[in-house]
Amino acid sequence: MMKRLGYGLGMGLAAVGLLLPGLMFDGAGADPTGGSPTEGVKQTIVRYGPFMLPPAGRGGDMDHANVFMPNVPKPCEDCYITRAEPDLVYEDGTPANLDSGLMLHHAVLFNTGQPDTTCGKDTFYGRLGERFLASGNERTIKVLPPGYGYHLGRDPVTGVFHIMNHSEEAKTVFFTFKIDWLPGSTAGVRPVTPVWLDVANCRTSEYEVPAGPTSTHWTWPSTITGRVVATGGHVHTGGDRISVSNQTTGQRICTSWAGYGTKAPYMGTIESMSYCSWDSLGIVRKGDTLDLESVYDSAEAIPDAMGIMVMHVWQTDDLTSGTTPAPAEANGGIAPAAAANKPSGHHDH
Ligand SMILES: [Cu+2]
Image (cartoon, rainbow, N blue to C red; front, side, top):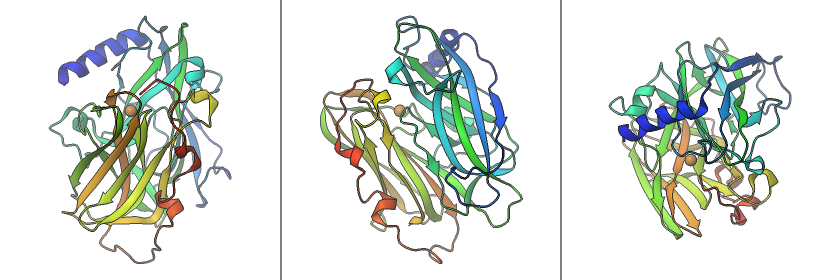
């Protein structure tokens, strides 16, 4: 596994050629369309790149070409992140997607000042720190319920990026996060802990899925106690949905549905994952077993499928006060319309 990573890193840097530190733009305070009604919210667009990708067949479409960037720009310091909107864009800000040959295989940000909750320091990824933000090509917007935030301190952030170019031309692209945040001094914000649940956790996150309907389970004995307030999933094209349940209590916490066929730039590949956000979606106690179920129905076998959910948990012993049960619209009890469509495209990452 280390060998594979080493290969990815070396080849990735060689293929990308030129890496410059990202640029950071400070937004002009609260954005009324930003999604969070909390007073005092600021917005920053943080940009990583440029990633200069050779054409397909000359390195641009290479597998496992992870680019590791230590100490990348941060949207804010000593702050609470409340919403995060990822994108892959060209220099002029227009989206880069499969209709022009570009695919965001993945981007993951690690907080080096915090240990990851599910992946220990004895693993390569665990040593990088706490996985607190990530995106696949479907670019899911993460939003916490009002009053909650992820605290980002002053420690460096490491980024891991894998972007593929399936076109005949060299391309230059940037990965961006539009981040809503509150200053660390904001009173009363409830801090959340990201809990990364992954069928192939602490490794490449990739596992093999055969053709046809399949269901793969992965369990994690919880090391924390608290309320789950937000979570969403990541599967690849051919994936149907991914769910997390508390096996010990029998409570389904969230189902995140894969969507297809309504957004032209995705060319029939996965275009959305529904996101669960509510105070609270579910309760977890230390020692409870959490069950992750990744469901695919792919026309052909997928050697490098993924099944990931990142839960945001407010660690507290006050598990119930002030909460109302999540409606089906908030916890994926009802599938969105796009989940009824099947994939018609093929870039199965
Ligand atoms: Cu993936």
